[in-house]
Length: 424
Image 1: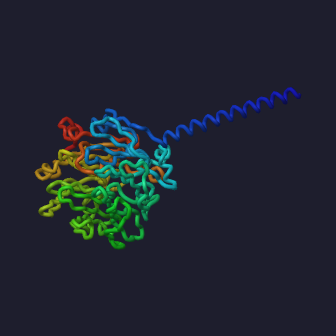
Image 2 (image 1 turned 45 degrees about the vertical axis):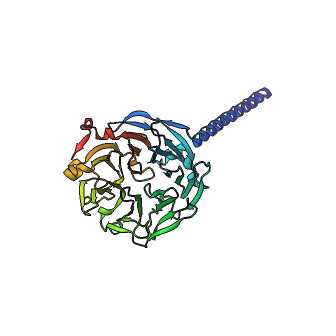
């Protein structure tokens, strides 16, 4: 009996020891994995690929930000900023943006971003001198060129779950030391909405323009017109809150070109020498479309009717205009497909809607209302004049969430794509 008890006790000790070793191994493996995940890859290579029937370069989980003045492409993965030097085939890690002491620190880990379907974590703009400004966890941070630590410059009044704080096109580097942004939040109480400006490398911020309570819901975009040097602002959401306006005195005053209709509900403007072009952010079938506003005559012309909402639009180096439609569950949506629209400014004047080419893209993935619900989007670079179209594909079945694809302007204009392009 004693021997049996001894054997049983020995087995328990052996089992506990093995269990401890397994637990220790799991702990060490997890610590290594999460530490490596937090630090991020030093480089992310581009690979040749095909997306939506188009030849492209692709990279895993990179949210496109913008091209800088030298033609380098900036993107982010979680809280880490990456840069693709012009002519290079690898994104290289530049900086790790802080979150401060908040739950948003969890965005540093890929498993959290995948579980929540939230690859978009930060917004980044870069100055001509190399300073980096970033929106992260409801704060604006500045990293000056040559320094290693971000400095918190402002805590946003409106930020949190449901409140984005600033839209992707609502943060603008005007000059090396001058930054602008517009407030973007749900605003159920129709409170005052402000445009902010810093003129001293973000050592201080001032509200330079205030939309009175009830005038607008929030600000969609703050952009600089490269042809006139005017600053433009777009607001929403209901018709009386929807405004497109410009300013030539850095928003001491604004000049409204249109308001009071969903035609003027816009998230990103595209500028050409002769016109301002946009796609609407509306679910109303009678007005949803791509529009051209003539600079000289102020004539507004619809180039094409669309069956979705446009968040993103850009002008490429050789004059090609590209826009994309989301899938959000609007009644006007005919199917679950996102789309690209390819526009030639010259052809649009001659042929109108028939000059707008449509490329059918991805299929909306998580579309059922609830925790997993998210829009399907094709997010572009926020600047104009890029050498290629950079797209982060969000919530579409054909590609991993957050996949970055780069499509050359030549590909978008190629006559070889006629089987993919639907002329309407």
